[in-house]
Image 1 (cartoon, rainbow, N blue to C red):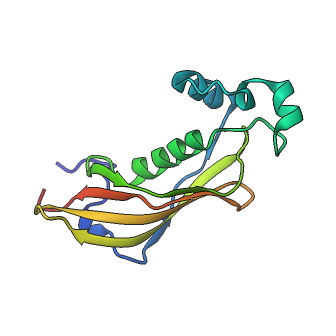
Image 2: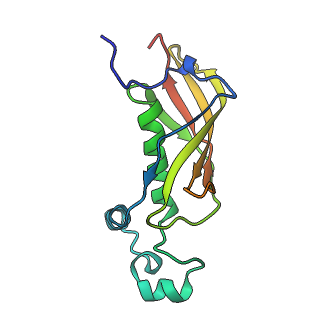
Length: 152
């Protein structure tokens, strides 16, 4: 029986393909839970007076690590359920700040899809652009993933 919601197989990725995830608003609760969980208790994220006098932007700043983690959740829930095997590499660039209340989605372009040395799987590289509600790219990253193939 086929599993509903199962992710893409290696063979489903073709260089040049593009898709977009659903969107998600980053809430104050998301921010507080994240910085508390990982111990990112930096003044920029927990001290409103410090932030008001020192921050380069207004609003409740969100760590890029949280934005990246949420972006990965959006991408993986849409593409890799029961098919993603490993995260191998990425380069990541933070381009603009994100604040609580921003809504993000991820635009994904397949860069390469090649068979892995072991049959039944492949390596897929994408360019992922995290975009806010104003259409601004806030983070770009290019993950390389090991993905199950049809023969897996």
